[in-house]
Image (cartoon, rainbow, N blue to C red):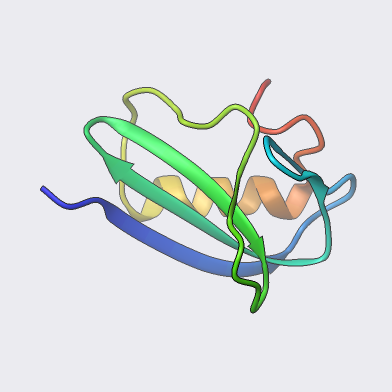
Amino acid sequence: MSPTVSDSSVVAGPGGVMTAEAGVVTGEVTVRTEVAHDRVTVRIQYVDADEWYEVEGSPLGPADSGPRLHREIVQAVQRGLPDGLNT
């Protein structure tokens, strides 16, 4: 079974988004959620860049997948995730 991938471009909220590889990412970004094998990987990239960075706290464990989860993650990015997905 291939992963389900969803992408959305938004502006990261106050404090940006903490990533494992690049630290805080700010500004216009593309958010990608990949659902495979009951895991949700969340990645982010600057719009039109080649590099993807994994959001701190990703992957997430088993969860509801699909458009609703992707929307919730995108909304969280718009609010800012300076600590990543660690809440």
